[in-house]
Length: 302
Picture 1: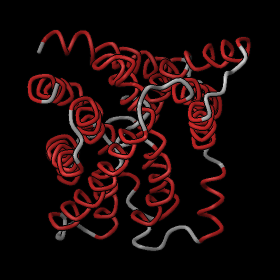
Picture 2: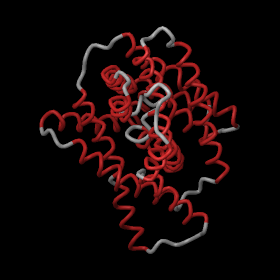
Picture 3: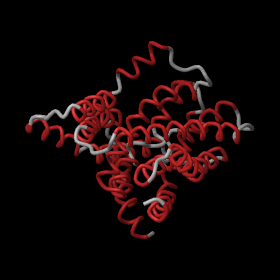
């Protein structure tokens, strides 16, 4: 367990800590750093990985089906157990239970825990998670009033990782060869993705700050870090995922809430302050919970 903590989890959170320190001392522009990751480095990593991945369409289908089933099951569970929570806080609690941090933490931890094959699966789930977060997220946080059709299509069109994924899959499926110079340039840009997303998370934590958690924050963290991994594992088994597919599905379910939920909460009328506090609390608590989940996955699944 100590090996997993020191070799898998701590390296990722060390870079997050550097980002938080820089956020406090230098106050760099968070939006600019986030855009570098969102519009350049992460799409390059997605394209480079999916254009050469050995993950089959069958494996990818299991990953997507398992994550979709997780969203349904976890949504029903979180909605049921939070029935006494005030309405705007309840919507935030539901969102933080559903949408995990599929980029900032999931990508590096998948790489450190499961190697390149784990990262390739994590990237497939990241693309799916980005689509669901920015399309279903507004519906959840808006209490059923979310994106109209035009905004829905506009949101998809503005997700560069989606287009990078489509291009990568087409190159792979058609057996096309990317020119060496272009491939090297894309690979160099993609290599910056994981450090950038970790630094971005640290900057976000520094910006959000820390406060004493409320009961809603503790409940949200417990649902996401304690209950969600079990739901994710069960969903993976239900769709027939095994081995590394099941491990990565469960790991995504175990991730702390995505930081972008806070920005969506501001936009669509959920309790943004409670959402931010739940994200920060869960992110720190994930140092311990992710260690336990990875140890369990190595013992039971792999």
